[in-house]
Image (cartoon, one colour):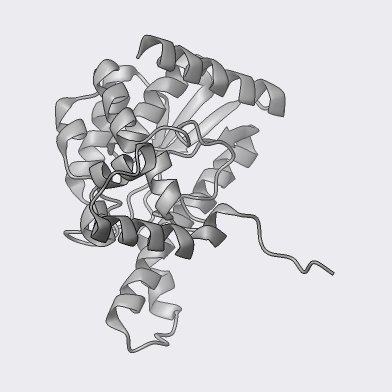
Length: 240
């Protein structure tokens, strides 16, 4: 783990130097991925890193967990409350579907997209890069919002499965309650990553590492991979 940590710390620093920027900014949700990102960025760049806590009708416990990381690791931060912006946007956008699930997802995806706008406001103002917190497991199946939490400059964990990030979190002494709580994007009350996907991160990780997994889950994961190809590529252009 020490070797992996050092590689990531050096890689983040190198990306900043190559881009000719002054540092990095990232969203801190109180979840395991963003917590590990915060600690690595702080070790890599000291006070040239900046965490944004961006509540958007969020769960109060998650905000407390975000501040737990801020205080424990002395990370520069600012809180930007997005509740009013989000609520106003929902009030003026017309409801154009009768499908309750589609409408729920459409509304929920506005949250990470508002956070993306906020991150780039600070990144542009400070001449910083935006660091994404997505891991290999999420990226592989497309479990991220296009032009939301997928709208970033660098992705340190793109080659690490959720299980590997969890092990790194333990090594970095991330608080136990953050490591053990159910992964959630906080998109709506009671929402969890695994509940929404219909598969667990352990199943996704097994598929990615060995391919040895029950047929039904393998088919589910492969379907998710195929349907989310567009999320992992630049916009399609004609070949003529």
